Structure formats: C-alpha cells, structure tokens
Length: 88
Image (tube, rainbow, N blue to C red; front, side, top):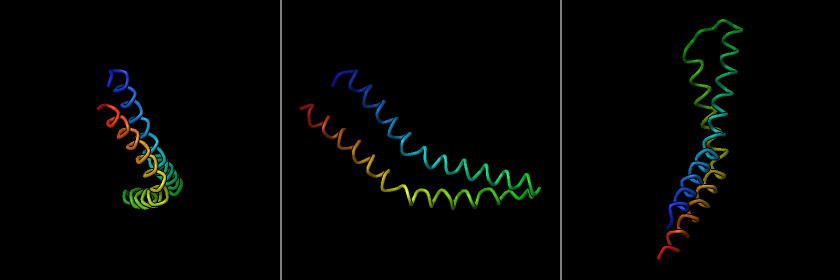
C-alpha cells in the first residue's frame, strides 16, 4: 500500500465520520438554538430546560438515522477489507 493510498483512506475515514456525525450535531444545534430563543423570549433561565430536550431530540435523531449510519460504516469497512485483501 502506497503513501497516497493511505492518505486517501484517512481522507475517506474523515469524510465518513463527518457524514455520520453531522446530522446528529445539526439536530442538537437546532434544538439548542430554539430552546435558547424560547428562554430569551420568556426570560426563563432554567439550565435543565436546555439539556433535556436536546438529549431527547438527539436520541430520536440517532434512532431515525441509525440505518443510514450503519450502511455508511459497512460500505467503508468493506472498502478497507478489500484493500487489506488486495495487499497480499
């Protein structure tokens, strides 16, 4: 395996990581902004009001997006396995 192939695999691993994590992070960000806006409008400054809806939304998002995440990981793992098999 050449140095260029290793760099390509690392680049692909980083892209798969971004592909998997971005939707969940965007869900957390959106819920956080909406709750922050609600707190600013109502002047309710309860710290737990931010965390509980975020946790619930992230778990629901993970549950809904998990099949796509697993598919992306399986495809990436199969590519790595094919590269390993091709080395010998």
